[in-house]
Length: 409
Image (cartoon, rainbow, N blue to C red):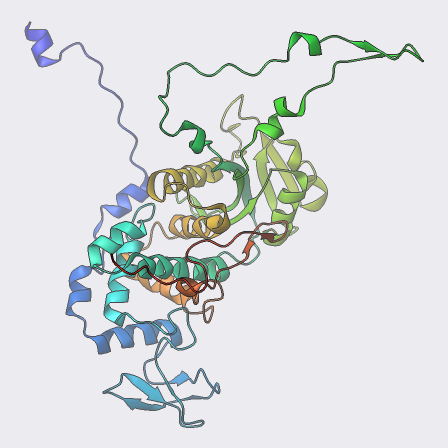
């Protein structure tokens, strides 16, 4: 009885080994800016912060109307500038994704800061409850942040040793499983009917043909229409134990040779060394890049000589948690934006809170006026889905153009 009460003789479950990133998050360097600092800021301080991020100075900046760089006239009451050349006024958000904003800058910074500090993201519904704003407002704001990352951060060629892998996303047949009990046993694989297994003989030539395979039993035909494949490429860092340093992502329909080659040509230089699994889709890399190494995952995760795709697999785990645990199956139309968010979170995992906020705002405010989300709540929707092999037409989502709320009864 004493042994049972004290737990003697039991084998404890092994704890997960603490990584270098976890040690950083517990250090003092991880947090250099917090909600208290935002509360102490005035609206003018918020303007100064965004001016430093956007232009590098709060005194000298380019006019978004004529492009003149000068120390323009400051209007303290309006928190705006008047151009010395063209005479037009502008604010710190003019010509950025925050153009024509309605919320105060300080509140925008609070929402953005709360979203930045989410380990694997933070849903718009939670931020709506936190800051008492309408759901369409915070939804479009977060997607403008993702647009800035997709257009400004997820760009450029990589060189060095890069790992590449694919991940099946969405298409989990959730509509068929909803409101139905999930049983422990796996469903049996579809089998061909007995009458279709018989051989047939051509009456004229006497040639024997095998049985025809029904299309409905083919694997491709059974795939859900919203199934997408995430392609990720990660460059290994040069510092030991620091993991990958840069991440690039793209969305494809299938992990085919066409899609992986399009991804590689867009983001990898020819002198790169690519590491992937033994999928036949990557076989063309030997002629395209300086080196191509493969790892057989059925035998192990690494061969002990540096051949592994563990950094890409690590990103896939974060992306799964983001899609299935935080944002709960986002639409395929905007999946590329969510993947760009995950790539940014992975690459900034060792940045402090203040640096991460400024890093995000720097990319977001550098892409100009929003091309995908301006006027979204008024029916202006993007008509394409962004794929690595070329944009694909996609139906609009959200409120249609001309939508008006119904009168209360």
